[in-house]
Length: 194
Ligand code: AMP
Ligand code: MG
Image (cartoon, rainbow, N blue to C red; front, side):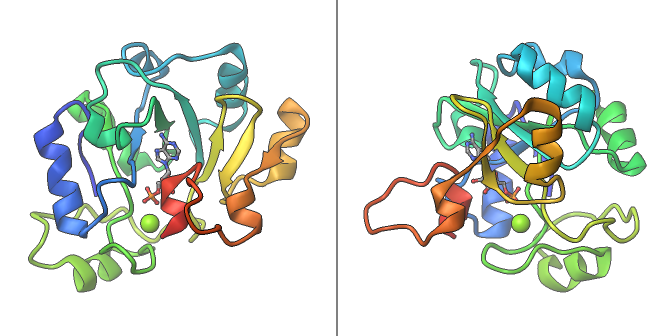
């Protein structure tokens, strides 16, 4: 469910349509790495992972720059970025020439959709249109990997720990994936607490 990632007002419409808690940040999608320059700090390690897995279902958490509104990042000092491989997603990003903040197109708390029909059933009346690119290839979310500190998987997904380790060596897995969170604990990836 996408909106201009540089426009706080547009992004707030995503949270409203999904009923998404404001403390759950969004992933920003690009079609070209050059688009990242004003958005986040790209390290050599990040470049290496992009070489191996982009375009594809790997989301990287990187230090953010001021062009990213607080609403996108839930006021964290970081931003999540990804380059999707689907030709329709790539064509949309290329046509609008904007980074697009986009979570899955479901109401908060419901499973992520894998077909346009799921989106229609769940979101009809809450969104202006659906761009149908056919069923999703994987049916699980993108892997979220933090590169702030030791490389750490914050959310499991289509790119496995083994696939990442083959490119960058040892990769940690966040405690929040392995064990239920304790009361008062701060989530490394806020979405995991939902
Ligand atoms: P989705 O709703 O499927 O797009 O999920 C996005 C996931 O990425 C959620 O689990 C978010 O909490 C996580 N995420 C997005 N931005 C950040 C960030 N800056 N730091 C940590 N996790 C993030
Ligand atoms: Mg989702």
